[in-house]
Image 1 (cartoon, rainbow, N blue to C red):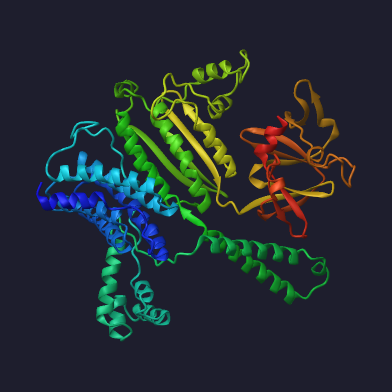
Image 2: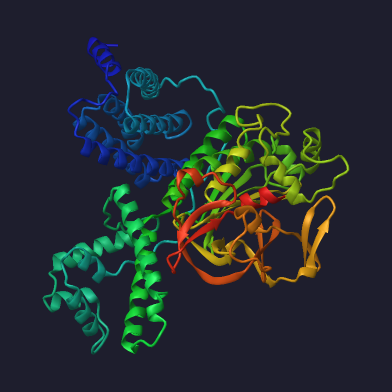
Length: 633
């Protein structure tokens, strides 16, 4: 190496990842957000490039991502990030020029550069100390050494499959059909080159007396000049091209301000409900007031829906992370896996999306380690392709979103799970539980049927955490498994954590809210149907089925209440396949409930998930079905 080259290497190794004292924190926050967007998009582009290495547009996009990060990092004085980005940019430039191929070790090195920058930027968010800086410098030096070796044609020592023999074929998430063409007039209006009123007039003139092109009409009438129309046509052509979507203008809003806005909208909804239920409006009121109250209700509900939608984000970024995870795991484990994603545009509450990532990681790791066969020949003998398929999909159904992780592996081993459950004393030796009950044992803490511990799984930790995290989000998991064909895990989650549809009931002098999705049916209460079964306690006979009887009044109101009369109705509710009968005195109606957190002293009471201010101004307790089922049975 030349003397100059040696000095450059030393300077690069001294590049710090610490934040300069005079750094602009406002610009830093924007940089972190934009850099993360660039890196997430680069991961997706690289996954596609693995199967379509000649896609120049995607390669250019990855190059621009590193170039942009390098530029802003240099402006902020983040020398460590700037130096690594510059090295990676040099490598990508040679790839673009055809000097080195984007495959094997080169592809891995680009992926590792993305991963490294993600970690360095995550450190900036939490604050970088001297220990972090030293660790990052060492890792950066090693990565830059790899890059230089690849640029000089000295391939680093292989740690995985040989060149030309990829272990994984992780496909990029499906982009779906090309978006519909963007209208020329909408582009001109959005750019400020055309007034909406002028567009409306031009559209009327476009078909009179004979159909003409809108651009011709606009130029001929002087509403827009030819250059503006030509520019809009170019934008339209790009927006309609497959794989390229029109970019909408966005505004970044502080999360705390957004939460305050949603809380205020929630208070408005409650206040409007209280006015609607006011006794003063139950008597004779003018038709005009009734009309105005109806209009107020309509506007309030629309505002509530708009407010809720502000917190809704697509699951695409989370799915993209899972695609990268599958690629790395399949390569490390030696299992050929094709990863598919469906429904990336499905939206969930921002908090739900942030917290669902860890459960998905655990479940996908288990699918690859336990579900997919180790020997491709076993798959071929079973009539399946040698390359396994793991599919991650999302779709909305009613007030819930379902996220499914499915594989075409060997399925869950019922006998092995039963044997382990008996060994741990979870069931009796002579018990014969249903498949649903058997699958539920895998969520027990420390439960594992693995014969040996691997880097991916086998320690019996993970699935219990998955279940607990999903329950915190008021969700549930269903499992469907067929031996030799595969397993599907279905995670059902609420669209938002702020609002639920609830059935308000009265028990004695208190109000309670049953989540509507948990209610199976509501029936009349007959004392003769109430039975005592040995070993099971009180039960209720409902259409020939014995259902555990759970008087909420005895649990939440041990001192009794205003009413001593027998309950008139029974609410049959279900959670995780278990049902219970809850006696109630009166149904007060179904309504959307704005969830309020309980005070600290009441937050850990089993069976309660929150509180709500009802339309009559009273406070109602929102019932947690999962917690109640565990309490009673």
